[in-house]
Length: 163
Image (cartoon, rainbow, N blue to C red; front, side):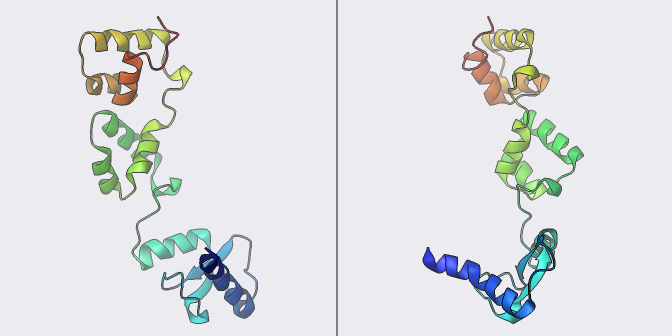
């Protein structure tokens, strides 16, 4: 742990000593070759966070961070959510959009199961359709919820106050 802290501080100390203070608070130390343990002056530069990320993706060939909102447009998010709710595998969508499965899951869950999302009548309809044996994967897109949420509603694990 101590060695990691020393390395994390070393590149900042080298940059501050030889390059001076960063131009703005938004600037951070960028490792030109992407290797964080190589803190030689020739490998360091100041870059704004967005520039640092662009460098990592376009110059070093790294995948975009799956948690960055700017990686996807609102239209792409809507498409992902629609396709996932229709039953497409999140892992396949993640590969297609070059983001993590966790990010896909977050997009699908955004705003899900908030009380205002489903009316009492919708909850009752979901339960009726589940009781009739309909597959949660077929029900979910009709209510913009996941199949897991349909299952939980059917089992009364949520919305238990709705009769």
